[in-house]
Figure (cartoon, rainbow, N blue to C red):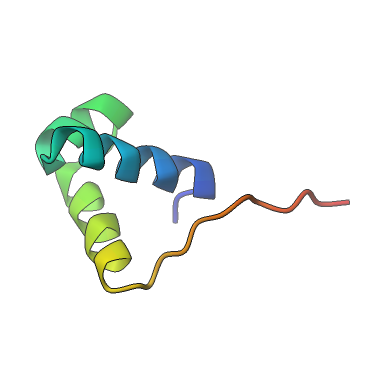
Length: 55
């Protein structure tokens, strides 16, 4: 699983390009990964906010 920061980057790249392939090229992952996270977001499964510091 990707970190919250990585997921935000993937979703932002997809929102910018509207293309799984282009977004994947921008963030350095596979188009299938982009599609998976976009689908999860669209289904309401992903809510990415600020990560809490540990410690």
